[in-house]
Picture (spheres, rainbow, N blue to C red):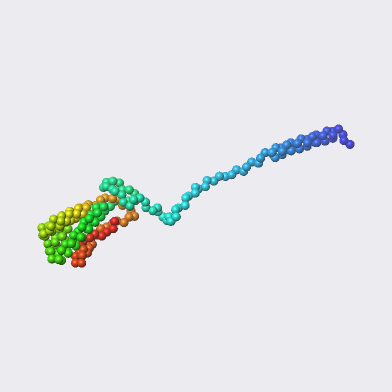
Length: 203
């Protein structure tokens, strides 16, 4: 038989269970509605990508820049260059062409005249002064006199270009990977029975 005290205890227990059940279900619904927290991710800095080398690249970069630069004594030397003294190529080439061409034909003509019995034309083998000497050692008409004078003047002009080109070098800066030029004398055949002296080299 239930007495009054037993009923009060039973009612209190039921009420306590209902309250605890309602509180648990509400907390569960609140947890279900909230989005799950995203897990923290650790960031790590990656090295920057490097550009690939160009095709055919092995070792140091190829040399760039002009092969030869004008330079004066006392001026700073650019990196990758070194100072050198070189012949004046423009004067050398132009002088050699003018003097060499005219002197060659003059010497051939003088040798032919000597072979035909005119020894006075042997002076034509003398560079520059030969045509003027020939004016005194031979007899010629006005046209031949003018040709000899013009011949001598052209030879002198060519020599005036050639000699400074060889004897008055210029200072330049040369790239380190460029070889140095050279000029050497060499024998040159002037005809069947004569020879002369020429120049060979690398520029």
